[in-house]
Length: 418
Image 1 (cartoon, helix red, strand yellow):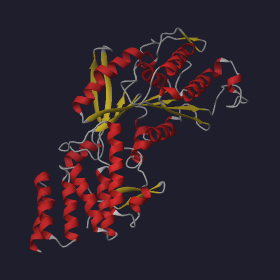
Image 2 (tube, one colour; image 1 turned 180 degrees about the vertical axis):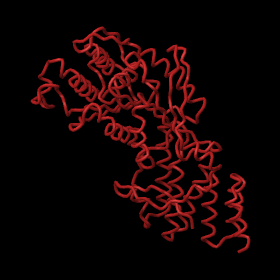
Image 3 (tube, helix red, strand yellow; image 1 turned 90 degrees about the vertical axis):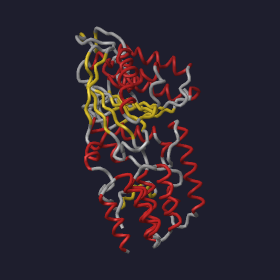
Image 4 (cartoon, rainbow, N blue to C red; image 1 turned 90 degrees about the horizontal axis):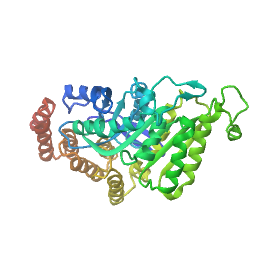
């Protein structure tokens, strides 16, 4: 019996089950998928090259037809490890397999991410070029996103994440270009920019336009609300009118207003991180933000999947419901579980002496992953456990036809000897 890595939710925690090496995939391809792919695209809009990186899901195989939602991360080279830490710990139950894209803002950052031109900022002259957010949005929509879509297996379900000026850019994208992304995370956004120009525009649009199907998560780092006065707290900050609290007051004002606009359909939440600074708040925000944005993705009644007493008919009904939820949100037919979990539940039920349930999960994995050698191999192991070598050989042969791996050939030979 081989062992699998598989994530199960057990009343709010994740159960780790043993795990095999990925013997069923081509080694060179596996290494390629796990590596971060760097690229650069020349932008006619920006008149310059723009660097980016792409991280494909661990389960990606070129022969499969599965397509993935995409996360676009502004300041992608500085926040890459932060997003990767969250994603690698929460995919499975909390998050689907997704393609991650990090966009460089290392040069011309202020120009690209700010929403209007200013000459002064917090009492000092602004030497940087400003106000290029609309141009940078055009680059994303008309150049980078089409490039990613043409070169990687994507669906149009996209999430945008930005911090500070990029948080300002993120909210501007939602307010003025909501068709590009479904989800938005604005981390400590600079809504004080240009005397709260975007904040004022956002309040008008949030009250009059529809944002049905869109989600936004906003954070505020509140460890240092005022550079000089320790007595400034969340309880009294809105009474202060100084330039030093304008940043935080702008986020609070926007968030309270957005939360009150129930009629526009925006799925909105925000959180104050009392123990975080501007530089530390991206990590907890991305974690909480992604869990909020993908709350619909989490399993319904997870305990029933883990309970041996749950009838198979009820499991089938739950899986059908989950499939409908995923398909509705992603806009394309979507399996009710990622392939690792379908396989994992199959092996779990084999170990618990519930072969009928095991067969159901393995069969479903083949249905949704018909080009996966691993799915057929798992079904072969099921038949071996039932002493049905004829069917086991049939599924092993299919796995060998798909992959050409010697591992399957050896398994076929060994089973034939039996």
